[in-house]
Image (cartoon, rainbow, N blue to C red; front, side, top):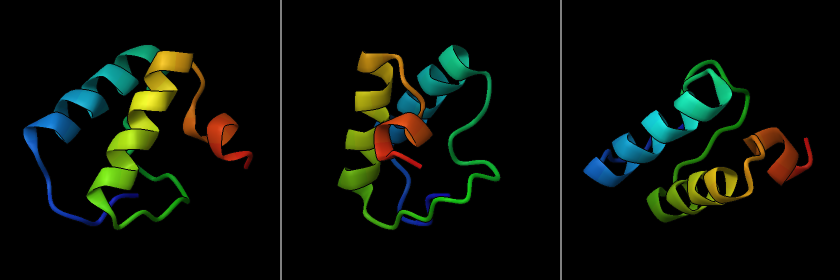
Length: 59
């Protein structure tokens, strides 16, 4: 779950992620991220590679 500041970019990335994987990446996920840029980069990579954050992070 992301606890940092929100931006239009993050909201857009979250919507794209949810459309691909069927769930909001900021939901009940057991991953805590506080850095905006780190979270945005993770979501972009997930979307580009069509892999969810668990696969990208190896969890």
